[in-house]
Image (cartoon, rainbow, N blue to C red; front, side, top):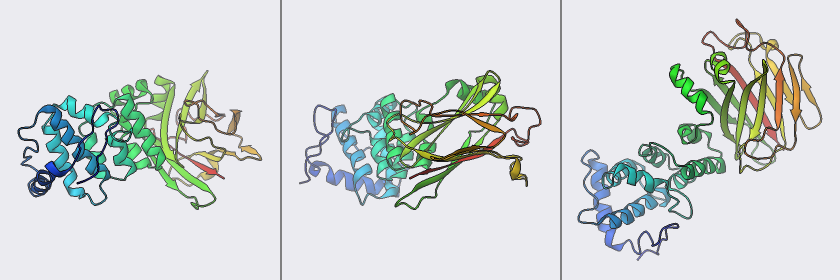
Length: 327
């Protein structure tokens, strides 16, 4: 008999023993893997409360069992979803039922990519609890790929999101590369492409991008303040404090051969070396986490927002990167 597994936040355990369900689980899982489109009922003759208890048991196994078969995830999740209403199943996935966290949290932390995709398909709108759990999970394992996949879990700037959809603007791109030695130095490069940069910024006055690196969530903002373009860097809430060395670059004529025209800001613990196209307006170090409190704030002298500027490509996309070293 398997040990009792407790579901926190519920008044009773998920299941006292796997024994009554083992045969159903094994036979149905095998059938679902062979014939996923058939979606046979996993829960014949069970009351709704019993269905939820068994579904939680299946979900627990999906996100925690070491030898769980990845190909069985989608058909089992589909069958579980079919046993409840869409709202009930979405709600079940977003409650902190497992060790104080949601199913999505454990799917991310335990690197169950198939489960992340399967669960997300049944969550049309993330609750604040699940959104926070997703962000915490991605931050804890520095997984920017999953963070990007689940970007709908939290909209940073609703005004810009609405405008982007109205303009049929593709999503912005952020790629994070870990370049540290994993022993004494944490270092990464976040490369970004911001679509329709000038058009969106003139309307919303602020553009925000988030990325995950070095077990933190970073926020990079472009803001128009009294006609001046400023760049801000901060940490999300619940992050560890940081004292970074920073190289920030906006590329001139992306893909061209004019790197000398790039806008660059170099900040180190000993000196801040801004080129003649940028100026440091304000800074606070170390970089503390306090609900996106701005810690670095740079004003760009050059006309990134000018017509025919060399700092956006022919599609209006701004290309740049930020290199950060934490020692």
